[in-house]
Structure formats: C-alpha cells, structure tokens
Image (cartoon, rainbow, N blue to C red; front, top):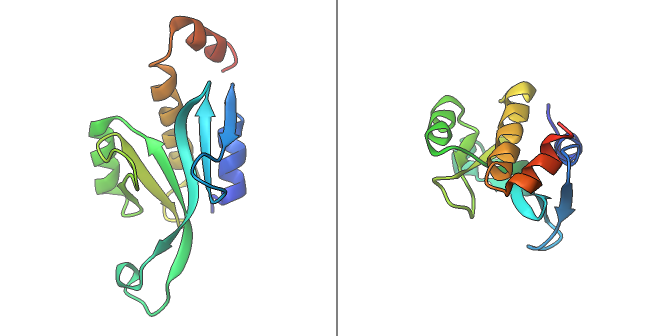
Length: 132
C-alpha cells in the first residue's frame, strides 16, 4: 500500500519541488517553483461511508487534474472523490486506502505536476524539464 512516507518521497523527488505548510502543520503542501500541485493530509472517513461501526483515518492526497480525466477517475475508482477544499472541477482527492494501484497513483501525481509546470513561463519550464 502506498503510504504517507512513500507519497512524500515521490512528490519531493520532482525537480524544484518544496514542502510547505501554509494551512497548518497537519496539511503538507507540495509546490513546484512556488505553485501548488499536491496536498497531503490525514482525512477521516465516516462510519456511514464505510458502512461499518468504526471511523477510520486514511491519508487524503489532493491532485490537480484535467477536468474530463477527473470525472473519469471518479467513475473508475471509488477512492477518488472531488477535491476536498479545492476547485472540484480541477482537483481530485485520492484516498490512500490501498484500493488504487501504486502505479496509477504515481501517474496521477506525475500528471498533477506536469499540469502546473505547463502553465509556467518557458524559462521556468525549461529549468524543470531539463531534470526529468
């Protein structure tokens, strides 16, 4: 299962990426050249959602996404929901409960990173892409 430490390590391996805590110590924010492309926080899944007697905590990973792909991923994976506290059209929340293959989560993280890089100046893009 892809855990918090593995996600942080993967995200921080991206060039020019920094970890920040603008929303408090409980929300890790990952930025490339100052632009946010991911957040990671401990979320709580309600008893009703789980259809069980226990509340369970899982790590919630917010990732930027193409609007059409965002909808498709939500249809395919029950653990992908509209972005929590984000623009629901452009962000998804991935609940790291072990139900999504690690390779698919890595692909989603890569796409989020590249969506943000693609909006940067050509100079900033070049300084990042040379390291990929």
